[in-house]
Amino acid sequence: MTNAPGATTFPGRSDIINDGQTSCPSRVMLRAMKGKDTMSKRRQKPAKDLIKIPSVKPYFQRGGITLFHGESLRLLEQLPTGVAAAAITDPPYSSGGMTAGERARDPREKYCHNGKDLGRPSFGGDMRDQRSHKYWSTLWCDQLRRLVQDTGYCMIFSDWRQLPTMTDVMQAGGFVWRGVVAWNKGRGARAPHKGYFRHQAEYIIWGTNGKCRKAEHAGPFDGCIDQTVLQRDKHHMTGKPTEVMKQLVEVVPPGGLIVDPFNGSATTGVACALTGRRYIGIEQSEEYCEISAKRLEAAIAGEILKAA
Image (cartoon, rainbow, N blue to C red):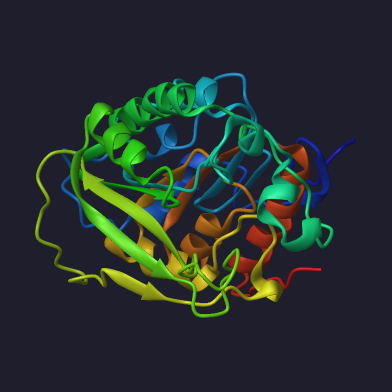
């Protein structure tokens, strides 16, 4: 197919043709960085290096928002050192049960009420036992530490079962563990029966790559986030609310770059697009890449796409 002069297309997305503004990523990234990135020039990487992975074309790319389709570890290893102001990610929990058999169930059985997925695709990588989950997570967390600039942030979502493991992972990966943010989903959360406390909280383990510098653009940031799950805003079986992610990306000044190796339905990317941050996401599922591209396109236009 022959494109209009200056236009750019993306693999698997023949319906997305850019207006020519992104035909030269380096120019776009330089414009995005100019006057916005408050980090020192010593910590900045040349804009042309921020979204470049050899021999891998972005699935979606517009302005400072980039999505790659592929396996997270393989692609993380190809990104240049020190490109990101923060890593914010919601990896597969490999949870949803107390036994190996319960954890090995399909995610729709573990995370969807009565097994009803409401048309959301299932996903892989959620069936590891705890030892293999910890080992695998340490590998990608170590890569995130390499990518995050000195004093930059790392945030990892977890449920209560994996919370001790993931705090170990963050430290094994080389970050300084700073604390846990609680996300309160509200009293609509389920409980197995009336003898239980409701499972109404999930957790964001956070740390820094070395010192935690004093923020000049915002802060201090809330240590507890109250936000219910809205089905119209949920595009993934375990998707997080856009409003939660908008609060988390605030740790990075506008114009800063955030990386998410488990893009899912791109809620981190949507939050970045809506608030003027840059984004690199990696997603293994092509179905979720397709969903993500539509959401990111809407968010760049200042809109939040409703779930089907």
